[in-house]
Length: 99
Image 1: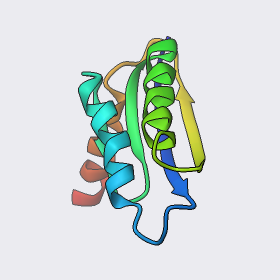
Image 2: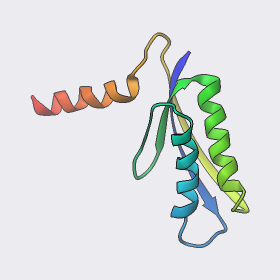
Image 3: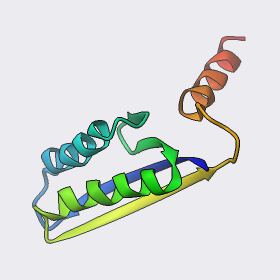
């Protein structure tokens, strides 16, 4: 089953600047080879459920290795039979905006 999972990992207890640790999470996602996109709030990954959730866990572990506490927010879109949704959803909105 293909899913889209949007997640954010926030290291806690490391001071005000968390960008370098968040970058470690994104590095894990990009190394996975799964389709992904990062914006100011979330990183979204597309793939098989178990594969995607394993990447999320690895990203959290990468941050947890340097932070005493980690907050994780996850949102999933489960639509059996749908692939390419990572790009298709954005393309649909862009087409609607250009009309």
